[in-house]
Length: 429
Ligand SMILES: *Cc1c(COP(=O)(O)O)cnc(C)c1O
Image (cartoon, rainbow, N blue to C red; front, side, top):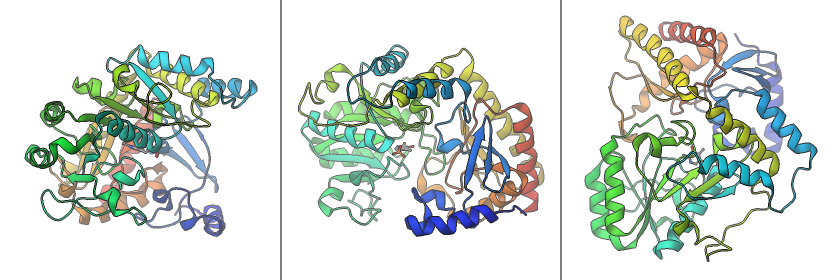
């Protein structure tokens, strides 16, 4: 059994400082049980906790670390930037450099604004969509996560197209009333919403590859339908690519599906492990942002030079030829290896995957495309697998609703080791 003495001590202390002992809820290990591990350091594919246990890491800070931990070129970029001063509150050359790298390699963006988190990017994109269209309502999908933005912490109601309730206390009803939530993968529901509220809808927001509540890969036709119906009604289509961006490919899901949304939001990989978010669109839409336009949005640390340097170093790594192909091959290898073992043993199990994202589902269903098709009871199997993997030296995000990430730091040996540990976990459970 894993020795967690130091982590347990640190967690006891942390509970005196932070609600639930953490600064972001899912870190608390509530869905898998036990004490969260306090990580002291990471290098490449591995992390080491306060008790000296080392793990192959497939959580990768929840997505940002597509090149693994402490990649030398990212570390160097950050330390060189730090020596020159950590923040100025003025424009810097580094903002131009990161923007240039992105805009010259992305077909669907003309202008960007850097912010400091994914939540901030989404919040600003929603304001921009409302400012641009002069409308208030937002249509979102059950099972998509868009950060802790008031208007988007709203869950579906019981009826088909009804207004739901908030999924957090502290959100005014007036805000909830401007958000409509429907199931993924259902053209009819969206059609119905537009028939009722078409002229009031500022935007549809979707994770084009929903990856925050299982991995709910959508049909391309569904995404194309969203493009068409928003155009028809003068609403904007927002792709929240905070997790998809620079992960599904350099152009994210927009590039993968060849669909041009109106606004794209970024976070995670864009900062190379430092706090960066961004939103971007055509110059026609972005000119509505202050100081050019009248949609206000600002940030003291936006475009922070260390964060820009880290992002640039990260995205340069992503642009290397074959970078995404190799990641996808590795993710497929791992997934196929474990899946075929489960099949032999007659265990209902599938690793849903796209690019370098995988999601473990204890179900034989070929496709799971909407949140209500996830079997909550199957999560008990994930708990057991998670515990077994920790004991074996493999770290997955501590919830069966979370996806895993293959990074370019994962070697063949890492993947082989992880596959064997997963197989053993499946039969041990
Ligand atoms: C992570 C995530 C967010 C929130 O980003 P933070 O940096 O955690 O605020 C928003 N949208 C999506 C799709 C995400 O995956």
